[in-house]
Image 1 (tube, rainbow, N blue to C red):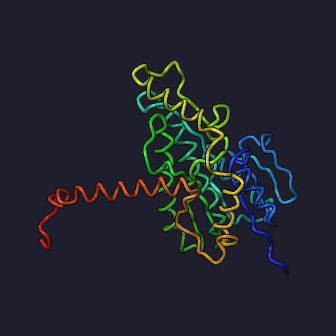
Image 2: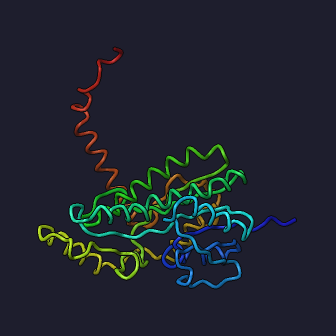
Image 3: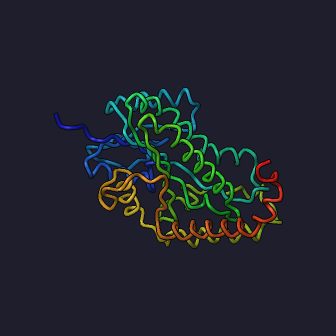
Length: 289
């Protein structure tokens, strides 16, 4: 009997990496559960793709019920891609607690709940791969965008920690941290949400103006190609193509700008550690005592 096709569950399939990765996986013969909060917005038509409704911001019991129904479509799920996210702009002082929670709900709490919902099925199977789509933004601050960066930093370490907790069940995890790609992430009408003018503070006008203009100018000229990026993600996750014979990495920086910026952040961290280590060790007990 021929082995069954791999089954992917991919969130955020109405645009960006979710949309492109669903196309790639289906074209290469895998089955895809293309998830979105609003399936009507998902423009996908392929014999290997089933569009499903899924909102990871729903309460966990509801989310688990949704996942249980989704599993029935193909009878299994092999690869889960946590991809849905948006960018909240505005400085920390301006952003309301409600806006802050919404940012973390979409980019952190929701993705964690999705993993909580799918892990029982993967443990039952004794196999599976979790793919967290993070961001190089997890590595550095950015004026008027730090809530997004913080949510991705939280997701980074939760995902890396999760990898250790689930490995004995035969389940793998990888963190993909893309640089800037020409997706809809920076489009105000899509995945960019600004703090309303009514709550913005004149003290931050200059910072906000620069950030708003930078997003506007940068949108559409990002270095990363989302189609090629999706192809690379597929290869890395399945150890095929350009990643043939290579083990799944704990984390993977996607795009040359990601490798550059993450490298800079690592260098700065090392520099700070070295610069202050002599003072840092003063707080230790004497060695051996």
